[in-house]
Image 1 (cartoon, rainbow, N blue to C red):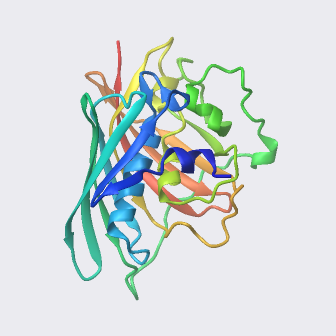
Image 2: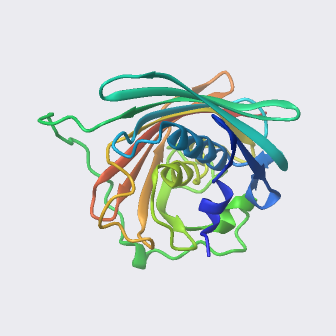
Length: 267
């Protein structure tokens, strides 16, 4: 049996650099499939096009242009350049109404003898088993039913908090090996941090995001039922837009990826 996110984000190859995917309403957030699924699908198509496991994704940017409404969509990819160690590629997701999303990615081989350091650490939070799972009757977007949320960072959406911060433990409800597309999906699963500072309901939508990956995924030793800590903090909003800086950590404090995201906050 194929895990839900893997099945929903794996496009069918229908020709050179061309793929078909069907978005469905169970994955909706608002008027279309949530951005993590759309971007995860695009990244899977890019990985298939590049076809080189020795060059994992290092940077991935996605611009969201229109809702990924229910029905068939087509993903087209293009390798822009393949050098000795690095490959750059672009991607477009389109349906009958036009462009849904477009993006670019850099895939890079490991560089021997490179400097390594990490001067960040995850926030101190209770371990997953001490944080209750968010009940199914809490109002959340449709796609959230596929994930297990354990909120333990910041404040709830629409609570009028003094700080725009949200996050907690997260994993798919079905055990699923963490690959780069699922990492994208997890990073985009929690609500925007800006909504915790809003007093009362306000819709929001992703404009774009850029993710940087610091590990090769899938990673040996990470179990399919592993818990991941997803953080999110917004430090600036204006003119109807808010930025959000997010990180995804393993339970033992390894940084897997980070994301800079721009949201439109509706009136």
